[in-house]
Length: 321
Image 1 (cartoon, rainbow, N blue to C red):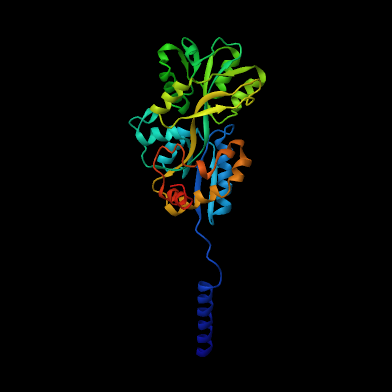
Image 2: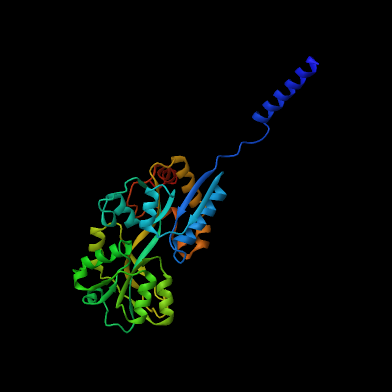
């Protein structure tokens, strides 16, 4: 009996050792990455969903999800509060957060790091075709939608007016969302509207299908002055026929959409995230037309904050730093 018991105990021990050593591959630990995007009608949301899909397929154990948010400012605050791991923001907003400026004055968020910049977010100043406003100088004395209070668009509006020698005291600022600004233009309650978004922008497109609109062009010297003072801007051309009835190119400026992560995120994880995104840019192009602008070659243009070491490693390997 003792002999039989001994044999059984040995068998159990052997089976246990086999199971532990070679009985099956160990599953990778789950990694949860919440991606903060923007509203469902914008560009961030479909691109964020595509990024989540890429990460889930490319990184073992990854559980990435994209969530709709209030976009740039909200995303940085969510990152600061550890509610998300990856955020899509405008590069100017990231600059303000890191340096404690504009809407982040006295609320510096310097624990954020860059992964890459993505595509241009174009400043579009929209008026109706029959408007007497033909240039940015003509905004004096007008009712101008400048974006929601504390938004990136509102900061863009103030900075642009500044290089033209204008302040809010010279006009009647209306703090409106894009949809409200579009409705205001259509109803005649607003004379002009600032919108900062990838183009074609749905709010402008929808309005242009109903009534003809014009986009105001930048004077070259004013664009140069703006870029010199605020280096996160770049020159941008809105090509003819972007919107119904737009027959000529429009010269304006743009900021960049970008990805940010917490400084504390593992360098290995950020490396894998960066590698996965840039190995699957075709999926981003399929998610939205602006995905065409997301390339390794332009990934560090307009980067306003320090790169995360994991992203830096990836780009060094690929000849970008």
